[in-house]
Image (cartoon, rainbow, N blue to C red):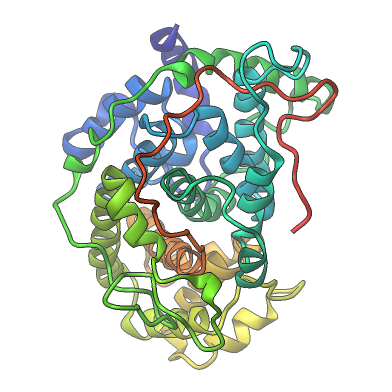
Length: 405
């Protein structure tokens, strides 16, 4: 079924991407071809949120590496729990495409009509509430870790990955995987069908650590601007006004201890982004984005794009389009429109530069979010195994139940 689905979906996945032309499977070579083979094998299809990166092979590999090692790789958490986090973070980031896809995948794993107790427990609402709360520093502090430290670290990997991916999807994909000509009344049944078709791949277990070899090894990155590591632990330090809830153990330290395959993936993807950021993002633009992120706590920037224009006006005129687009991608990706993209392209930027600038900015923002996700210290006791089977929601309960942030 997985190979059949991949072949059937190929034409539709390519045309979903806007602003750039993805590499076609038959034209894929080298690193792009390797990623495409893994993507179809493990995910079941050439997912548009991943292949939109293909004009930059390094960005493509970094995106897939983080996605595979967080969402797909076997671990202590259930796939349904990880899908719930993906859907909840996507909703918090106003990314309807990812919200819809991962909600339907979750529905396939956890059919809402099945009786409670027949195949495990429902996804606890604490998980989805915590996932939504990661979007801002203040709400993240108010939500306790939903699971023991070792399992929370896995969910945090999914959350940070989708804080990155949602920003790229908002820039390069429409709100729905279905073309505009598909009637609204037909979209929900089609989405349910897509979720069912993806179910075989979602139920498969991917071996951890198969994708990081796509990129060179690298150490975990330094904390993002605006954080101060405690005892040298990346993302572990108190910021100004921080409380004990930030903990002595940062999320990257927790990944290194409890999710080493994702720590490796995150390190390699971050190093690659640093390299292509230096190639495609002007130095002054990188400094401007870093300064804005240092002062950002996840809150909204405003209803208009005027804030980005005001901030970018500090740059030389030739770099302002890049500055505006990078700021919008990092802090308000749902506000990126064709005009912002075309303004950047008018400076001579091609598909590769467009993907690399937005990818660099999106990952910078995701790293900032990672800096405020608290993960409790790991217990000395051996971690309990993940519950068997797929969770089932209570009768009449939606599988993605969002607790108030």
